[in-house]
Length: 222
Image 1 (cartoon, rainbow, N blue to C red):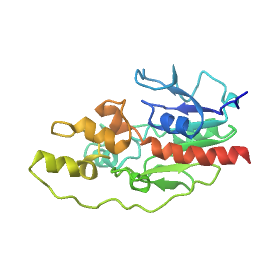
Image 2 (image 1 turned 180 degrees about the vertical axis):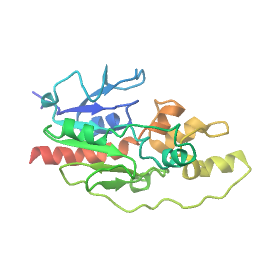
Image 3 (image 1 turned 120 degrees about the vertical axis):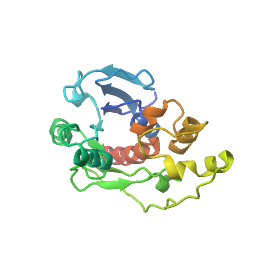
Image 4 (image 1 turned 90 degrees about the horizontal axis):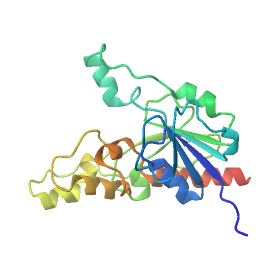
């Protein structure tokens, strides 16, 4: 009889970038998000992630990616320009209070979020052509590496040449690219083939959560 796979709960799951990595690491995954997620690739429950309609004790790992808008550099710039317009809740503390009793857990967010002793991962650490820095808080060791992404890329007028350099220049920013093939370029750079363009801007590459998930499994086994 095959061994039963450990279970992971993916809170604030979005379209499933983190969930896919956890699946590849060896978990059966259930996602929870307050918005419908028709392209989420695993079992999905629509609901409030801070009041999940499941028992955390039923899961080996609880992963949480609370909204990052309160801490993103773009949001901070917007608040300076229009302080009365941009108000985003900081859900990190509430998330930590919710999941800290789980068997093991991970909180993921952008640089600048108030995570405790986080580690940072970048796409270049996994051979991806994407500059998207994310930080992770967990009660277990997560090895990290050094960014090796290109700091600059030539600005070509030719579409074919621009495609070659587009991921380093554009992927990792919010908003849309401005030429044909943009979604396919972003999908390849992220290692994701099921999301639309907006979902890609909100996601993390599955390689990040696969890496973290493998070390979560090691911690669980010990």
